[in-house]
Image (cartoon, rainbow, N blue to C red):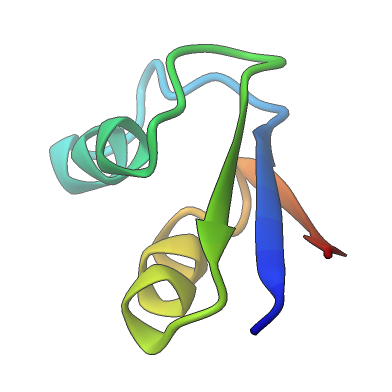
Length: 60
């Protein structure tokens, strides 16, 4: 199964609480931090919630 590398590129300051919580759940702690997650529907949903704050790329 493929993995997704999620990188935070924008700040969560001024964002909604659920977006800040989602970034923390994904393991992102600030701009420039990255996390590798499995390509599963749960993570896809979280990424969709904060799509304007992160970039996503597939890794093997």
